[in-house]
Length: 336
Image (cartoon, rainbow, N blue to C red; front, side):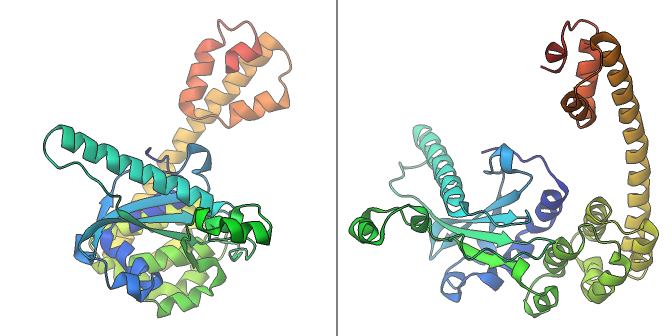
């Protein structure tokens, strides 16, 4: 288990779906009724951490919730896929993450048992696996990408039949939001914050006309004003829009000025944040240019791959390299 370094999609997803009421509205809408009727919804609680491998965090976000199922301890694992195409090996990834959850569960109970605070556990809790596939490109889940783990195993039909009882089985639940017209989300019984999240993940990236497109969602946006954290919700929405969208801030402000006092406060706060980020970005860019000049003087013309690596580094890495350039004898030593 690890904590996740946020990208814009992940940060917005976590801000909204980490609240049990928002998560519950999505889960109730997509899980089969035979399952939702057995879940103890008042007991639904967020479990901290992330199980996604660091190399995949730009493509997936995840949240784990604790609850009870027919009175037994259980988990609900939600993975949000925000890449442009579905992952053929998603069933295998979900198995990996579920095994990690079970390992953590057993380790915790083993610690409790050794501390004489609980009896030794002899069972594993149920985990309900849900994948939410939602992309701006609107690319539906590929029918060639199985939701059943056994379908990934390379076998002829006769061998599959012979091995059938011995093959691992896991079928995750899929909410293919990318296959939906965003307007159909109005038919779901979702909290306003959850509906706005799912809609904006579809329409916001690279959108130059959000000032117009968001007018269809004013009712849900206004409803955030009466939610548990209106300023935080509006800040999350605005931060997401200015990060992934390409609509002028003035056009976004025109929409938010129609929503209420907290939304207007969020506009001012976001503007201050953008200005501060711009100043910080300017300082970092200055350090990058200085480092490139120093490295060129010392090592000669830099390879394009080295220039790209320096330009894409964060401020802490640039500081480290700038200090190292004084003593490094080769470019590899500098960037190592």
